[in-house]
Image (cartoon, rainbow, N blue to C red; front, side, top):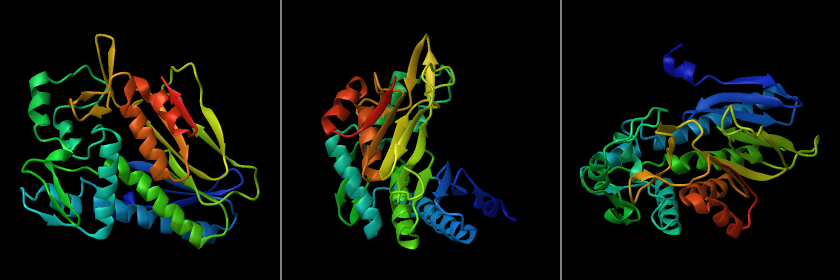
Amino acid sequence: MSARDSARAISVEAGQDCLVGRFGAMGSPCEILIESNDRELASELTQIAAEEAWRIEEKFSRYIPGNIVGRINFSHGKPVEVDDETASLLDFAVSLHSLSNGRFDITSGVLREVWTFDGSDHIPPAQAVTDVLQRVGWTRVTWRRPVLTLQPGMEIDLGGIGKEYAVDRVAGMLSEAAACSVVVNFGGDLAVTRPPQERRAWRIGIEPVSAESRRGETVLEVRAGALATSGDSRRFLLRDGVRYGHILDPRSGWPVQGAPRSVTVAADTCTQAGMLSTLAMLEGYNAEAFLDAEGLKHWCRR
């Protein structure tokens, strides 16, 4: 078995009153909770889910050379024509940029060149951040669907919306493929295909923000809809008692001040939930007020 085949293995195991399909994609553990004892059906649904997740990863990951994101990022200032699926994701990113007053920006990925959130105390020099910031900013991009033109040295990164998009795509496919209730859970971002019949609701846990947290796991009962979580529990820097979370403000190039450690939002779709959890993190100190104004159920941990 090749390393690629090994990385793309799937399994189906017995869970608590359900079957659980597992695989890895987009840097996350992925699982499909199936309200059925039919292993053949569970294997089929897991295969459908995995293949779609892997397709999206191959197409949109910035780590895979030669895909549409790679073509854009290595275009050296030349225009690139994109397909409809990519164009729709770019349009969605544009709407988030507008809604967030520039706080959400898919060109900000180049800031990773100076920021590495590995739990150390390494804060980059201010000038280094300023230098990289010259290559950040959606307003520097020319986007006239279906043609995108980046300035030389700029990049896009769709990682901030790709996983939630994959969850919704897979949930839609599994809803058509099976009459039973299925939970699609990609690294904590999830959607339920339809209300369960054999239980009152699916019980979904929200992890504590740290092992030392005084607040334990929160368990939610979910019958329909989706959840998404944004946070910096595992990616941060710590210097002189100050914690720097990995959520960066692309306008300054520095971590957002006052952001919660974790934000979970419930919405009709995972894409919507993910959008709002991310925008809340970018609001920093105003995260709770922002979510209250949206009128959706949410859980913030500080």
